[in-house]
Length: 403
Image 1 (cartoon, rainbow, N blue to C red):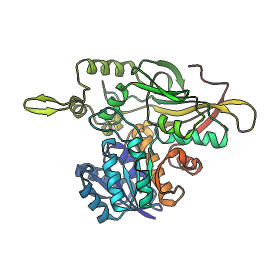
Image 2 (image 1 turned 135 degrees about the vertical axis):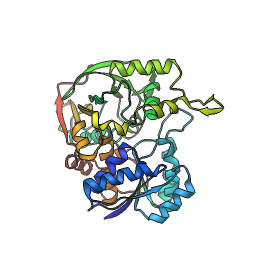
Image 3 (image 1 turned 180 degrees about the horizontal axis):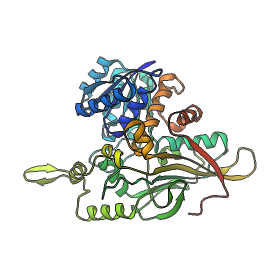
Image 4 (image 1 turned 45 degrees about the vertical axis):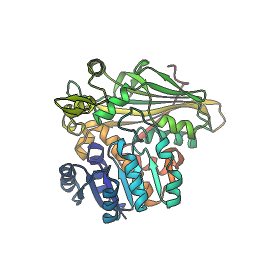
């Protein structure tokens, strides 16, 4: 039984805190902190109603390292779970280093003023975390997170090597809005409009954003157009699966989403450089995020399913030659909302965050330094996915993907 501090009060945090409260044998005391105390209180109220568990709430600026360090010292958690924005990863990690407390997040660091995300900033902290005798676990969401664990489970149980890997992220849900993002609008739009990158023959190859489109028939969802993008797990997968010849990430978008995004880009609404408006400096993308529907409000109206998984090709463990396996998870938006009050995009990230935290608190995953999901034993994590709302399945395909 362990005390935990969760930072951030969006939809992912709501799911994670609810799931922690459902598991008091692991999470004996839950603290929730965010810049906006009322958001923390709303989550705590929901948890109390659904689980009967009291969550302590705190107001904190996650970019204020001294104040955050003081809060951690005051609470005395065994683990800090960072579910705030990726901009705050480094300051929260610094506070953990100050206080000697383990750290977990779901997305790698991204500076506010550059639309770029990579692991280098956090990997560079490995020696300091190791010297402090504490652990940082990076990317314990779904993608990154589960998708990396899927690949390592295949490598442990099905494939001796992975030659080709494709990660397919499909959201077949309909929220009824003309335009809305299913997770933080600012991060979502920066990610989607960045140049695509994929791993091929020992290097990353860059292509224009949304330039490569492929149709794919997803189980429980149906045919969808998916677009090649860059996602951070490609960086860690290429590092920890050195034999990879090609790795790509794909995400589905409807035509209406693409059309809206194109117009917003053309009129300058996704810019990240400040502009002056009525004597004030504003960032267009931040203003857009403020007026778009909040992802955590989409739960009541979202219907449909998600389907996220890996297709991997490589040398079979049993010596039977090259084989291709598809390992994936299907999540229902309405079922996720009924359990936690949040739609499936938040659910599929919040549940793995809880499971990653459980891995660390129970000692199933342990170490000193900064680690990615690929470095851990996939089996206990995969077992908890089945037990806590994200059951997965695996099947053999006739051959490698044709796209």
